[in-house]
Image (cartoon, rainbow, N blue to C red; front, side):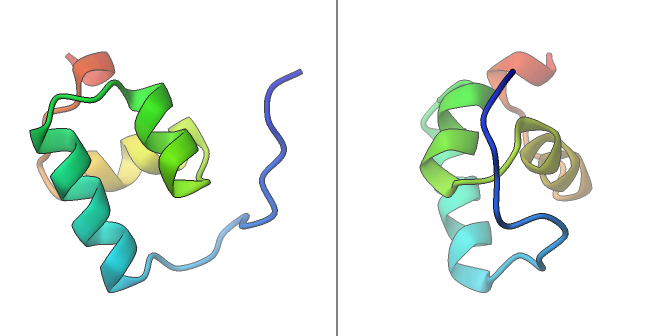
Length: 59
């Protein structure tokens, strides 16, 4: 059933946020960003919306 993430409900670090912004600006899809950050797609989607980022799968 999907990937298992050990980081459930952990706060985002400033490095993770910076990497999220960088990957989103490069046009990477949601799934690839989530995998790169070892975060769930839902977590990445929530953070991206909070930061007003445009990610391919969110459009």
